[in-house]
Figure: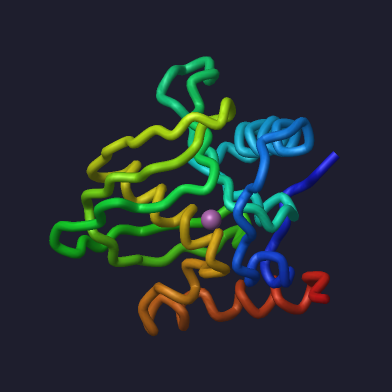
Length: 169
Ligand code: NI
């Protein structure tokens, strides 16, 4: 069973590889990602956060019983636009750390679904922000890279504690 990977594990800093074939290994990875996202009550999770350096992220749906999660394989943004908006973000891989991140509010994403079919989706607001956060994970970028200097100072102690207990390799 895979588990949630915390900063400062090196897998979180790698640029993830594209998925070449959606086989049983990838499908079980996706199932584990959904499981861990639910367990940790995240809005989304990216494959590097469960230790797999693959270009996949999943996001939670809005149904109360879950089950309408979305899977994005080899995602890419077709459009990212609008005026930058500031909003506080957290990350499952950075427990107890929160900071304000500026992102554009409107995104169109293209990806493969679990059947290998290309789809596009458009979102504004919170989910558009979530997609950009998860896409950052696929490029080895974390919110601590994007937050303001002030937020980094506010989180300094917690970050240092995390970095001294983490298994960095
Ligand atoms: Ni995250």
